[in-house]
Length: 302
Image (cartoon, rainbow, N blue to C red; front, top):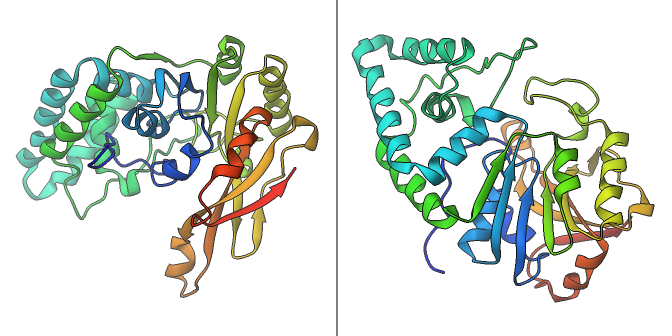
């Protein structure tokens, strides 16, 4: 297909840029893609763009995010209209337009978790980064240099996403282990859990942590059920490794995908390449031999 893969809104941690590399470890076609830690569903959108899977199960414990994606897919007109009205409100504040963001954030934290509210907060906040306080309240600050993604750009992307996923997708906000229990042979489960540095305790970037041992035990459910899976899990930068490797008995193969220059290192005047780890389940490892070698990969069997 020609053109650009759409995305609803900028979202820090999204695998949108790495999606083409990740997809190369998937079959050419399969029944259903499941994302238990979907975020903004970048992989589902990228896979749908390439018409690889027939159905999509999009799940994340962060319910407002799921409602946003579901609204974009099922009711794009309403979402765009509501977002446009909300976005335009900030100009009624004059030079104090930043206060509009804080007012919307306060409404969201008070219980109005409407799709347009979370979309506006993501479109206007710093680096599109979701941040939560210890009490579970959204506490990211606004980007004061801009007014957020324009309604026109939101409309183009939302309608494009809707055309890709409408009538092909199911949405939920369950614990990931419930999703594992639902998976069956013929599905492909793509996982992008919170990084290990935040898995053993609550972190302000996530609704909840995912303890390493608990996660490893849950992966065994998929192996027992003969369900294929891919896992994005930590990596390395500048020769420094982050996180503990998944145990060998899971039968995965670890691939390091080139994620490009580290932004933080660049800001510090250093050059360092970030590699993100991708774990490939047993059945999917047959695809490794066919991966084009022009993509920079570092391989290690674990």
